[in-house]
Image 1: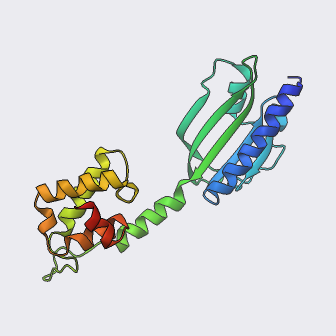
Image 2: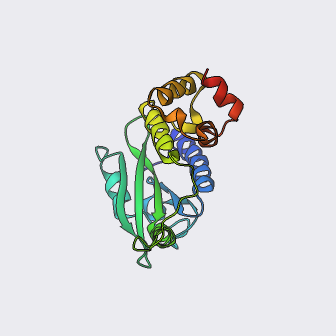
Length: 208
């Protein structure tokens, strides 16, 4: 396919997008920009290189199929993939079309899953406790878990997080805690303040 001025501009802009994503998602996600107008030398940019490929390398089978068919699905997200050395990956491929509806580029994200699986295994091991132990103990005030759970439920209903609650939302939360009797829990105001990351004075003001 002959490159037009529009193609050159789109590819130049997508190089900036690829660079930004590469910096943001480093080091766990490879970001690759393919120039589908030149499938034999498709890789235009590669950031956080996890696959060992180079700029100028040919397009993948997916890239070739997309370049040949304007009706090919534009976004294919989170599909299983494998790096050349056998590492498992999760990939997303986004096709970029020109004003005529032809694919001229593809932006691909390849996440190295082995890193996260290893991390998950370590965290699971580190966070495990011996439920058969003869001793159980808590350093949190009695009822603290119930307060935190109620706060989480309240924030979830609003589609936000506890620390993102606004002033009027915190006041509604405090009314709900009072009505449920949770505001009577020992050191309830301290628990709420710590969980919302606000001062005790703010919590007392919201509870008025």
